[in-house]
Length: 437
Image (cartoon, rainbow, N blue to C red):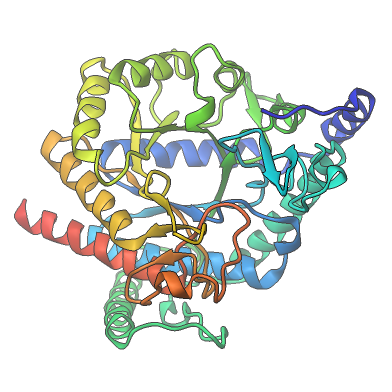
């Protein structure tokens, strides 16, 4: 996929990265595993979202706070509808590497390596920029650490105080737009939850500290095994190896081969591991991956993230769910309605249709209900800012609007309004299902 041409530089940067402190802790990872056990059992939901590929330049307070805010808002909507807790997980603090369909890119007759994300090379289309640079391993680590430090500081300082969900807005963004109907629905829901929180506290059901903060976990695709292995180590007083770059790495659709390096590496760590399953996946594939990555069949270890496409989810998903259940394998199931619904406009712009994303999400939920396997949650590429990268939704983004604020260097993301609208659509689906039961 990509190779470092300077072996001595790679060895030097790898040794430096290996000597640095871990980005996350084993107890945080164990906490996440305990929550994922609840996701498997249908007692919790997992909300996973963030950038397609983070950039080092975006390691700034405003974009980071914006992503946390939209994840908070979406989780509030899902809690209200599902009447169950939500585990919040960002695609942040390490989502600097991105697989590409082709190892090279050609422009104007010049062929260079593809851009694989800021952890590997640079977006600039030049020989120097596109050459994989091992110094970016340490630079990526440093930016991931800064991001996690800011997130922890925000959470510890009451950024997500559940006493005041009415403060969870994005009003500080001058250009944030939200339809009047969606804003009114959100405000009604916030008022209801605020009353419920105060009632619970009055009864002494929850402590002040429990109601003053929420948890965020970090995740990223474990594409660059040099980065992951340099931060993998035995932890004092524990018997297992932990990958301490993130709480939950995932294996992509392109790198999930049973005999591949990624499965071989991630089967040796204690972290929960996500696995993307595309439309060509079979039940045998899923069972084999579960057996390889989780030989003890422990709960809270495997999260299958289905990315099947709006036109194939009803055809493929039932067999996956039924096959894994029949084999007795434990796993949480999450829907990624983004990655199999991409398209390119006549002018060559990559985009995604809000309607296709919505269609896959709703179909996946209905299939889970019909098969009887808990719907574990959702995985979105999103931002808290007013980008114009996906067409449709209440934001009214058309193909003609895409060039207005198209910022992503890789795949298109839902903007603030589209993300919140998607949360409401799923909430209504869950609410209807609960009434029907």
